[in-house]
Length: 131
Image 1 (tube, rainbow, N blue to C red):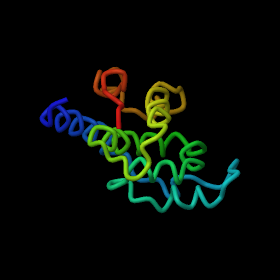
Image 2: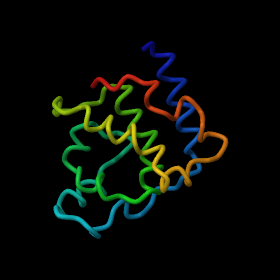
Image 3: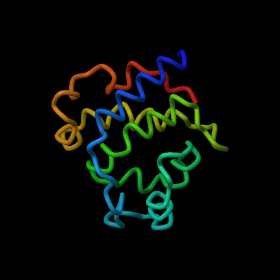
Image 4: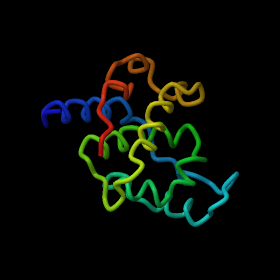
């Protein structure tokens, strides 16, 4: 994928989700098994996050609410498109599994602005998920 394509996709994603405020906290301990991973998830700088950060805070990623998912979508796509993998190269398809399911889950879809809900650039099937 060309840099200009990535830039265009990222601009559209950030425009689509720009009105979504950062939830605080991103995830609570409700239903969590690994509290330290939830803490790491909440403390991550998602504008600079790498796949390693996702792995380290996976429990928070698993249990976070729909508003957090919508907030994170453009940031996770950014991570994948810019190949920000950090030190974790393995299991990259775990992140793509989240990205494939999240935008179309009923609880998440209700938070996606209607004008963007059916846009091709939101649905990850159109993107390459190789880190």
